[in-house]
Image (cartoon, rainbow, N blue to C red):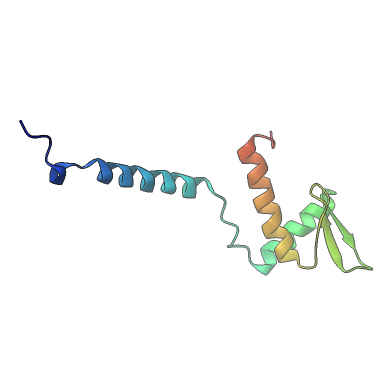
Length: 96
């Protein structure tokens, strides 16, 4: 009796489908940081300064993200970084 017909083998289709589903699941849990406009960034940075999460260093014209020690010369860069940093901490369970 001959073996299964290789043309009827759908295992690669199933594996491809499973990989696509996993990729969609990962994408759904990621935080989109590309949608921060200048006004939103300014508001977030102001809130972070008030919460002592960000320190303004006027003489160097930088904003320092205190938890990470990273310095930025743009409020938009800082806002995008903070969103990603927060999402990463939350995903690791450290933000609890």
